[in-house]
Length: 284
Length: 84
Image 1 (cartoon, each protein chain N blue to C red):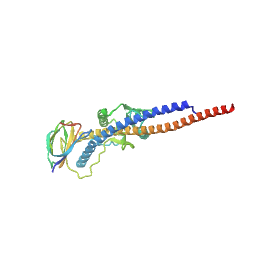
Image 2 (cartoon, rainbow over the protein chains, first blue to last red; image 1 turned 90 degrees about the vertical axis):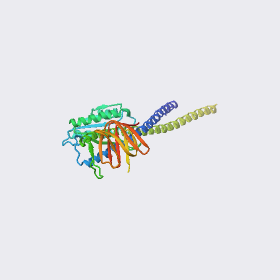
Image 3 (tube, each protein chain N blue to C red; image 1 turned 45 degrees about the vertical axis):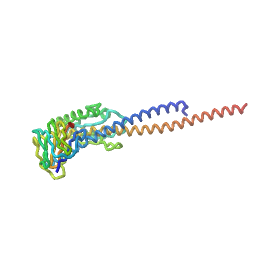
């Protein structure tokens, strides 16, 4: 049986762990609030933009633009993974990375050339360990999203138009609620746009339809990516908050159990000493 | 009949409300939208958007973006926008 001193040390160490996890929970909660706010505020823009594009698609009947055109044979595929820099957020990264790996293996099996682009250390490290080196961008914060997204969407559009890849996929965690983040895969290029179901209207374009489309489509792509980054961040904090909440609760349970054990062995030691004294006195 | 106006940026909805007329800087020139405008879509240059709302004139500074007008609706989507 562990000595009294051993138990005391364990209790102290669990207590300090609990302090850390509960502090991390608070920090994640504060960051989560800000991140969800940002994601929610950005949604109307995406919704309005998508609605407009779909109306244009319905009015124009047949849209044609390089970014919308599927290649007959797909040989090179770009996979973009948005992850987090830090761990301690339960299955947030690993759930997504496992799906990414599945896709990568499938692509490899069918003889496609794959290029990987990852955001966040966790995604990079996981895939690197599985033998998938990737180009990587780290230390993103919400302040630098706009720039990162612009760089990424430029890279995607120019790369796609230059034929560096025939298809691009995006993996990220969709933020459903604080408790659920859904690992999601979207094909970002070529873009797929559904025409609106409502009665189509013929638009007047200024300067002209083709030029408008050439501005709208990259904007649409960029907005989609921006939204993915925001949701991913909200998801990361939500996941970490839940994980840290569980950890804090487990620590409390453990402290309770240890304290009970501590008291019991203290009582046992006292009883033993008393018995020794009494039997010593009786022997006299 | 009035116009339902929405001015939206990626960060937030800047303004939403009912107006009588909207003026905006289109790619090929300044344009105004009144109710019953034909469906119209244009890109925007950075400049000034004026909304003639129920409670007076509102002036916004917008960055690049685009505007969509319909018979009873104007949507302005801009990278940046600020109420002046």
